[in-house]
Image 1 (cartoon, rainbow, N blue to C red):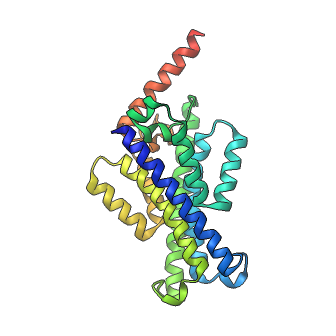
Image 2: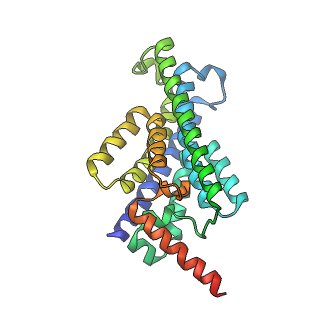
Image 3: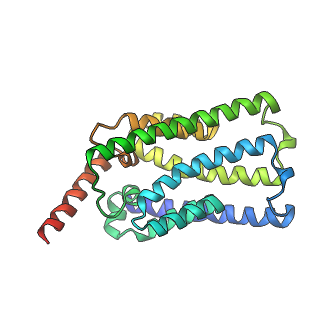
Length: 254
């Protein structure tokens, strides 16, 4: 089962990466470069804010995942510049790094997991969780305010004339990142009803739902849990603790 999931997700994100790459190339050829002030309509600006808040959430995982700060910064810069092309490339790369045993056991857990134990004092753990709560609450409120303001000042987004080639390309880019976040939500949730509801909210409300979901997960952590525990479901948290214990024992034995 695990191997099938790994193969399916690897194939999915490979295809999505090709789709967004082809979309960007086609849009550049047919509509020119995106760096033109006339393209920045109110709804394009709102879409970009929505897009980059989701990028921020994915980037936070990439920073946690990478043990080398140089590679972490490089991947985050690529996320900012290339969006879901980088998201898909990074995820596929992580699946290729899995061993056969990891692919069979729980591939999503091992893709999310950082290699190497992160030991932090309890005070620093509490500070990180508190900062993460404040940041994602602020980002959620920013996006909600942007959405309301744009609707009030520019009307409904469901108008044909709004969908310029670059806005359409940006929306495809945006929703490929939503697919990545939806896979995470589906992995996290034990109930398919809850998972489906959250995924529907991600599709309809974008990064407002992303921030709400992350903040909810942060509030569900126990006081001694680090912020990155929100990445894993209950089984994954137990597994992460076990992996960490093995690594600590190995270091002690050496």
